[in-house]
Amino acid sequence: MAASNYEMSATDKKFIAWHMFVAVAALSIGALFGPLQAIEGVVPNLYDFLKPVIQSYYQGLTLHGVLNALIWTTFFITGFLTLTTIHGLQRPLKYPKLNYVGFGLMVAGLLIAAVPILLNQASVLYTFYPPLMASPLFYLGLTLVVVGSWVEGWGFYFTYNAWRKENPTARTPFVTFGGLITMVLWQFATIGIAAEILTQLLPWSLGLLPGVDPQFARTEFWFTGHPLVYFWLLPAYISWYGFLPKQVGGKLFSDSLARIAFWLFLVLSIPLGFHHQFVDPGVPPLWKFIHALLTYSVFFPSMMTAFTVIASLEYGARKNGGKGMLTWIRALPWKDPSVAAQLLAGILFFFGGIGGITNASYNINLVVHNTAWVPGHFHLTVASAVTLSFMGISYWLVPYLTGKKLWKPQWAVIQAWLWFVGMLIFSNGMHTLGLLGAPRRTPLGIAPYIPDAWNGRLLQNAFGGVILLVAAYLYIVILAVTAFNKNGEKATTQIPVAESIQDPAASPAWLDKWMPWLIATLLLVVIAYGPQLVAQISSIQLTSPGFPYK
Ligand code: HAS
Ligand code: CU
Image (cartoon, rainbow, N blue to C red; front, side, top):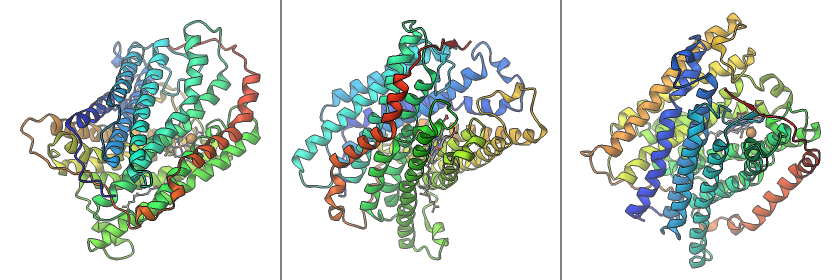
């Protein structure tokens, strides 16, 4: 379906733009703390200079993780999914007020959680593992952000149902289809942290429970924490499959393959959480083994994506005169910042994906777990595949929403390359440090035990981190000037919806049916988690007191 002609109302555009505004505002603060972590390794006692504004390394790291990994992503994604719903279905939201309420709850939650974080009363990092204890406001705020995003999701479902009633046999347009699966995945996955916060952390921090069970809390956390990474990734995939082929002058190689990949993500994303708990004594080895196997299976939809997206890119490049086995890559429109950013994001993701499989291998995980390797891995995934793709998407989305031409597109191309190069340097440093045994989440700048072998790598991290900060701020400045410059040139940006080489109507009808996939998802979760949930709940011991971080 060529949906490109539909013009969204000014109110809808503004609503999406508000999501972007909060997302980028969060990034602008969160990104400041990235290089601080990186520089901390070579400038001892760096955090002493930041007092009284920032009390400690852990407060800085919490700000960095919460604002970047949780807030920048969730706000960008809910805004982007609003667009894929409205534009794909070519109709406004069915109950816009419901979505406004959802967004309002998210903003309220962010503000409520921000207070204790800024006051150093929630320096518990973005995973908020107990027995580290935060102020109740932190848990309450995070809960509201999640609930708000659910409410926005319900708004998408109502809109989809209204469309479905009028179009009973049509295939759901791909971008909407992908967006809905992303939201369903998120709502299913977040049951874990909702249960963790509401039954343990919040009452415990309010003094209503004497203690918590850290083992069970971690299990609940990773029930959400793993699929969370696909909630981040799938919007980038929607863009790679649904928009990028059009941007490079080509078509989506296979609509059916793309849809199968999305269903596989829904079914396979949740029952893998124990690959984050390989070292947890309370999880029996059999369940670690089952989750490791399932982790290998979720590798496949990403490999399918690599194949389908690169085939779509090659199709476009050859149409533009690209030749040769690999030299067609040069015929891609690298001068378009949106394209360049997403291609570079994809290239970094190859390395991130390889690292993921390494992590998932039990015996190797014992070497890399809790070392700097792990942040090395997730900076190639959430901070590259996802964040650099979102930056690329913004380069057409912000002109579309504001009606203004992108300010200095050639700078935006440089921005994407800076991010790419900065990340190569930084993530290489982190991975290597991890292999040399450097722990993650540790202020190495003040550690007395640094071997000489780490020093060069710490310097490398600091160097990469500074390049990343420059790239992040270049992105923010380009967007801000584009959006707020009163004299900006008018733009007539269209949303670049890609057609499929294969007629979507020819893709099998079972790929557009929800029930079998929802049942499969539920069943697999029950099989992979059920027995352990029963075992851990029946032996629960709410005995661990809290350790408020000061
Ligand atoms: Fe991971 C830890 C395993 C993917 C994020 N991961 C983390 C943490 C985060 C994270 C945040 O098994 C740390 C959590 C914490 O704080 O403790 N991860 C995997 C595996 C995959 C994987 C198997 N991770 C991700 C993604 C993330 C993410 C995606 C965020 C968005 N991860 C783990 C494990 C741990 C872990 C263990 C625990 C470690 C520990 O011990 O603590 C796979 O899904 C990866 C599959 C990916 C691929 C790559 C396909 C390549 C593509 C690129 C196409 C190229 C294009 C460009 C389009 C197979 C699709 C072409 C360009 C041209 C020019 C032609
Ligand atoms: Cu995971």
